[in-house]
Image (cartoon, rainbow, N blue to C red; front, side, top):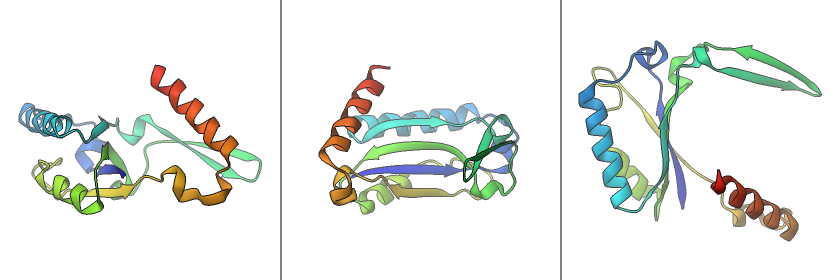
Length: 141
């Protein structure tokens, strides 16, 4: 099972305040532990929403909305992608994570990633082949 582990933003992360050396060391050690356990697929931090944009879809219309975005608690500051045996295992790993926003309340969300078999018959053999080609090509980048 793959899970996306989502680190919620804080006022500091949205202001572009960089983590301390102490936090970067703690997170680096945690990431190394995840890699050694064989569950880490990917991870990264995200720039503040002030450097981002959203595209709103309304029928055929596309509207670009530049950041920053309100509701900091709904924004993402970083993520991991993990391969674990269960949601419970993901929860146990998250509980071991250093507080990503020291000195303030922080929240990490755990969301399971869809797998091909979750889509049923609508995910035809042709669509599965296309998905495999796209993933293989993406890995080359």
